[in-house]
Length: 143
Image 1: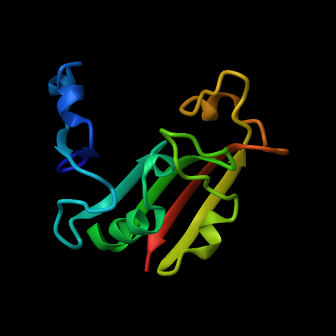
Image 2: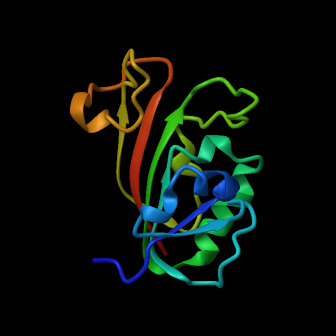
Image 3: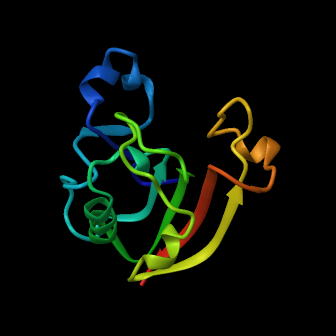
């Protein structure tokens, strides 16, 4: 039902070789810390397994707020409390949502990641988080 679907990723040119042209989406090459979109461009923004991959988390969150219109919805799924690696340089703390100014957290869940490290299958097992790393799933509204 979306008027437009836009995906942002620094590896878009590589993904084109994998067949993303078949998707009903426009892909834009770029980074979350400096998005090539005008202010207030989107009504809904999703960050799916991506925030731990950015170099500058604060800059990425600022950009999310800039390109999402006031009253817009931000949906996120991110691995939380995982140690940083070369490809995932951010450790997202469990209290990440509490420090976000300019946002209202509509709902959030902490879920166990499971043995298979299945980030996108959380709705299937949805086991509650007990300790260690896991998934932080949330819906926020930009104030």
